[in-house]
Image (cartoon, rainbow, N blue to C red; front, side, top):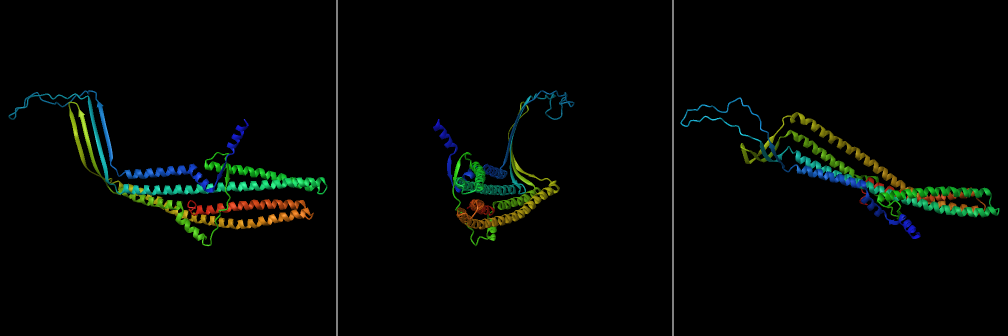
Length: 441
């Protein structure tokens, strides 16, 4: 039983080493959003095939078998005369025409129509479908970049929460030892009861901070596991974040803006939608033209005692034109032009948005880099301040309050440094996402 319990516990707390690259690949494979995007691409590809298939001939086959009731026919016009006609050398005898009995009929037909000219509507439809297919592929690429950025952010959150948990845990151990030391000193009458209460209160506060840190760590781990498609109880061992690449002097805002213009998938997708809208205007104008098609068919029929028809082949060229298109097509053209104008205006709005996103991401990264250097100095200063304050307190030159304040400042400085390191990486990756190059990186 003990072995089974240990086995179950080990399964629930399975540990797995995970690099950032592996996390990204697993997230891309598991993401339902990307699966939806791929289905949209498949749908656009099918629409493009459908547009091409309009060039193929249309074939229709139909047939019927009819069972007829014998009708009551009362003809008011006589079918024959009872008198002989004596004109000519071959006189026609008197006869009474008999109406045949028809109680069934069968017929079948096959028709083929091959479009030869339709005002270029078919060709423009094919072109528009191709443009929209390409735009959908670029939309899927944009969604992929978003998934990559979200995975990086989730991965870094695990790092930040784990670093905070480790720092608070270490600080709690120091605080517990300090309480023990102060308890012994208080028993020997070396420190006042008030100083002992201060360090005990500090220990309680750190314990509460540890609970919050543990809670945040578990939530960030569950979030990352869900993104990767792993069991929620999996304990991931992530890498350190020492791979931050600093900006060089040449990588200015103008540089990143030019990179974004060349690589942003959503901007490229919108350009293809503009091309599709332009093609839509041309296709709507095709209503003004007549349609020309090659036609062919076969007809067969059988009515007992009346007619038998076989080998009824026909072929020809059909021309159709609707004069009403002269006054009905203008509205369609106006709608297509309005869609084109909307797409072009959307491109201007998107370009402004891209510039703002790149500027924000660039400034955020520069700020994160600058903060990181400040955090490094602040950590050194806080560590040195705590060391000095501890020596002063041991020599009765500082109060317990000053010592605890130095301890809190040291803990906060270490947490800020760990968070600053992670934030710098996230800011750099967000800059790559804003410029459309995160997938390449």
